[in-house]
Length: 128
Image 1 (cartoon, rainbow, N blue to C red):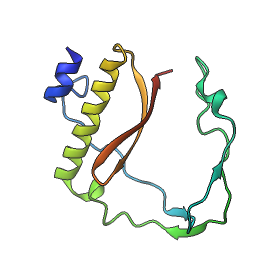
Image 2: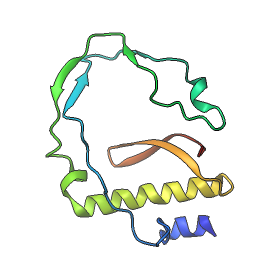
Image 3: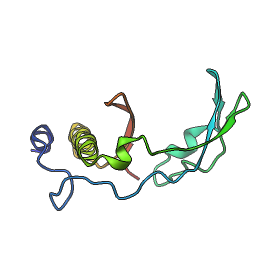
């Protein structure tokens, strides 16, 4: 049933409403590295233990010096375009419902990226 709901786009939130933006980007400074590089981070095995969510506890260190830039979100349609928001969030919600159904209905911690309007799922794991 959940897969059919995802395909039909009929259920996203517990109350049946369509998804909506509740918060906006808050970072005013961006760190940019002007060439392809590597970022080193701690072993992530500790992040994946049952009953323990350690994501974000450790520092990531870039190989190259980063540039500090000021963020400007004014051109991002996610901030100002209601139709864009509705379309993108609906598609993300559909992906989430379909992934959860594919994982046997177990709630998932899903990570992904949107690039060029396309949604890419990076990983999914049971929600802790």
